[in-house]
Amino acid sequence: MRKFFVTVAVGLLLMLPSHTSAQGSLTLSTLNVQLWPEYDQPSMLVLVDFDLPATTLFPVKLTFHIPEDANLVAVATYSTEGSLINAMYEGPTTSGGLQAFTVTLDGPRARFEYYQPITIEGHERAYSYLWNGDYAVEAFGIRVLEPTDTTALTTTPKLGPAVVESGLTYHESGVLKLKDGEEFKLNLKYTKTTDTLVSSPQGVEPAAPVDENTPGRVSLNKSLPYIIGGVGIVMIVGGLVYYWQSGRRSVKKPRRRVRTPHENEEEGGEAYCPQCGTRAKSNDRFCRVCGARIRRQEE
Image: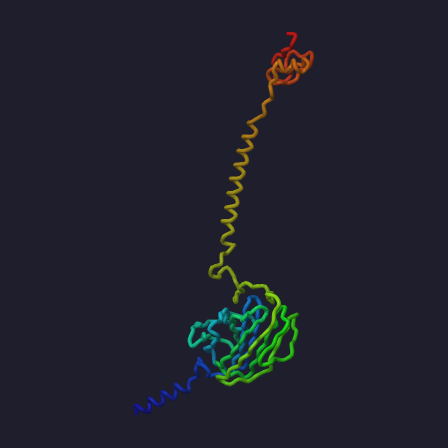
């Protein structure tokens, strides 16, 4: 009887749906790889978009591997409106010459991005991309952006004819179906006459709207009273300093030069007030300004 209950319990556990998926236990509906060489950095920007089947039970965990020298910069999911939102992920950790990271998804569409070095020798560039078969893919595609000032570009395997979109040239593969563990490798070579990037370096864009509640952000509404108060104090102090300096300048009146009788004699006998130096008329006996007695030569 005890063995019977154990058997029933195990059977019930096996019948319950699992909310996580082990490595390689599911098939991706689509996986599209974009290679953007020398886009906003002198390296390769790799963008990987993928979709999960409609029958997937969420949340689900997926583990991906990227090259050991890659720099993982973003892992995100697509909202229903099509915008990208940061996703929770663990890693990356290095093992066996690769880096692995695990992402937890609550929706069917996601993306991850990383930069990887390009081999540059003079004008010649070379790069190799590898999808190492983490999951089976129903529809796999790869697209290469042609860098600025490129004079020759070749890929192995050869991609389809170039297409131009918004002034940029792309080379695309056909749609492939890959099995679980099946690899896809693309070798890229091109000649570039300058170091000009396709796009100027971009700043980090937030995956979620930034508001006053965002950690680390200083709200101007909270700081505005302090800013206004500080400006007011500076203006008051400046006004006091200006008033004090103006008062000092008004006290220091310019002195008139007092002419001596000897100077009056040298200037043809003209009379000047010995007190304030004001020129006197010929018949003045006293200064018209300060009232001092005018001294004349004949006196």
